[in-house]
Length: 373
Image (tube, rainbow, N blue to C red; front, side, top):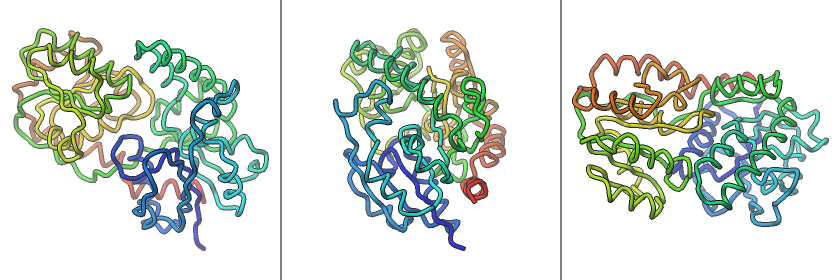
């Protein structure tokens, strides 16, 4: 019997040019490879229609995201309200196929009584209320700070409301535990993210700089970059490269003023991968401990030493593959120890043991299929 599945995506999942779409796209590819007939529904707000998706889906439908004041609500979070689309609801009701909702963003159908007896699964990419609360702490813009705090409050109530309406599939064990403790969620399981990487390609030997990379337009990532400049590399004579999309003028000026640092703005995917592989240390602190950071996985598959704080690795199963420090002084000490220390076969073997045991697209696609059918 053919297996048909509706997948509702918060964004167009191609091209795979930022961390948030890795799991979306490679899950579609992996399910297609297992014979699933995918009916894809995407919210499009700038990325355009993508013919590449037709290779893996029997149909692809696009919906405009309703941005601006029309999606401001006192009950629904903006990320949900802006994706509450009548055409989507109508299309999902045309049959009885199971539905996979990608992210809290796409979970509006869970509020509709017509779906009460439908087989629905919610992919939890983040504990969103915590993520938005952290964003409020990461920005100095008062308007954004108010928006993030308001959204966090709405999200906490909303996530509590939907936490037991369907099976939830989280990207980290930590998020599973948090939903159980905060919302009393009973039907929640862990499924690792889907990745483009299928083998560890880190280079042995010694690199020539430290690298922090990420989408620098995200407040949390800019805060991490500034913290590294101000607190960790302020007195180290070790070169630091900061690389990523859309850095602010403020970050640009701060980087320019410091010795031994440089900023690479808007590198291509190939340039970014080249920097990750050439760096001696990929240093990746985080100020948000929910979800899983794709940049960490990229660095573990393709880079040498990875230096992180606890928030980056807690609950990921990757703790043994990283060097972890809890504060600026601890990270400084680790960087000094590792900067001239060759990345060797022992660490390669550890990654080759741990990473494929967790991040196996075929195995994880088969597990998802088993849960759905």
